[in-house]
Length: 336
Ligand code: 5GP
Ligand code: MN
Image 1 (cartoon, protein in one colour):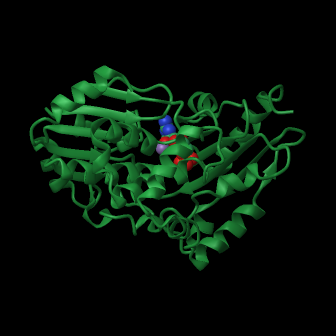
Image 2 (cartoon, helix red, strand yellow; image 1 turned 180 degrees about the horizontal axis):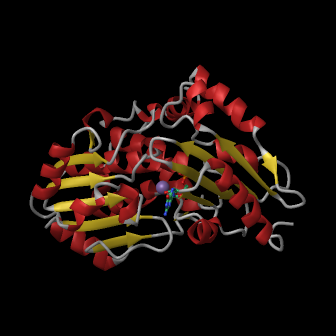
């Protein structure tokens, strides 16, 4: 975080402002945790804040403090537009490309508000007036913590700490990914000092599967394919399989990681059919130097981080599966 960033932010926040905070579409723990923690912090400073999410969020996040006040643009477009038009400041958290908040992306461009990006993905787009981009950090929540610390550490209360802890925990794979540093653990130590219930937070996120979700995991695992002789696997889930298991948003979260839990596997991909949007949503994960950000960008309309990325295909599930298989084979030098 640069001195320029924090000084400019301080002067923007010197008088009460109308603020809108936006997570990416299909928000995850880091996106919602950072937005809700930041809202709570700004509320305490006397600003008037709203979190406007492009769409619904998964059930395993519906306990986060303040989530009940989130405005879902997909359901309340008129209110969402009004808030955006009237805002003095717009914070975009945990994404760096306006394509990730469709269909809110067009409105944002025409808003007069000062736009502030806080994000940890690679290769940020140039849409913000003020930017804090840190791809080396494991979560946007860690970045938001850094900002709060620079502004006024005493305002970080138990509610904020619970939100920030959630994002750090989920985006670091419960503190096991490379992006977890000693600083991450120091921050977490400070959060624990605020007496958050970390065991309950973990249970809320990871031990609240529905019966259908567990059945869907069974189907996903039985569809696992290894691309012989390479260290790569992929999983497909069809719309029919989703329907059979009473699919709800968020039910497939984390499924792709099972591929990487296999001994020696370096690359895991999941393809999930979405008939309503006519796309196949994809997630990419890798263990070491295989760069899935580049892979997703080059072949599957996506991006993300070196070891975790997402994307989409506009072909059928079958055709996407075939393309994935053939594309993996093109990387045989890196995957054996
Ligand atoms: P996930 O696979 O969990 O949806 O996403 C993994 C990472 O890639 C996340 O950091 C997420 O923000 C990013 N990501 C997911 N989908 C997309 C996408 O369609 N485009 C881009 N650029 N990034 C994505
Ligand atoms: Mn994140």
